[in-house]
Image 1 (cartoon, one colour):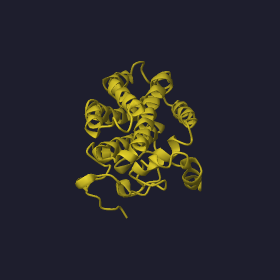
Image 2 (cartoon, one colour; image 1 turned 120 degrees about the horizontal axis):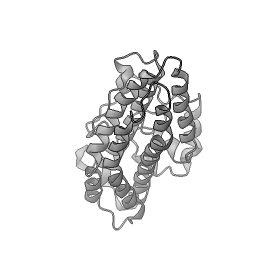
Image 3 (cartoon, helix red, strand yellow; image 1 turned 90 degrees about the vertical axis):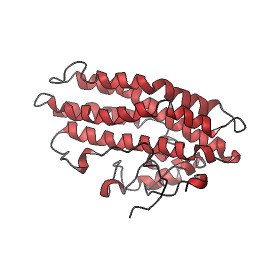
Length: 254
């Protein structure tokens, strides 16, 4: 059952409706890819929302852990978009039936918020606990968040449109995505898995099991991979088992 929280990570940036909520996604790999990406993008949005909501209320003693979370989130999003630009999108556009440049608008959208995302990461990486200011952090988020949210929503429609690939090329479309998924899985296991699972919501849109992982993996992530930076994962909106929970630092906004 979803928990009732007046201030949670489903805002202020609105989450994206996943295609599977209203449409069939098993009929074409492009639809599957679009749906998977929608779930990933919502995890990104929950992360940024959680950062924004808690930023002004972080006690001095907890700033270092919080900024590690912020820097980790920014690095994950940055790496995701670099992988798209260098491997995923070029791979899709080499598939017969998908025209060259079909995903170029999405890359152009990256440029609208990449500088702001970099500034956020630099602030999180270089700021000391004494220097930290939640208002400044919120201003940095405000400089790029609208463009980023628009991009994350628009890209789902673009990926859905890849159903235009020639008949018989569906398996190649899926292979490009799966190869990139495998590449992304090489990221630091003490950072990305515990963070991403904590940015999921298993109750979203009536219930879901994204991301699909082997049985028992959540326990491995929670008790082994998540231990090194456990202090930073306190700020996540869900636990490692993808169950929503109260954000710990909301001041009087609870």
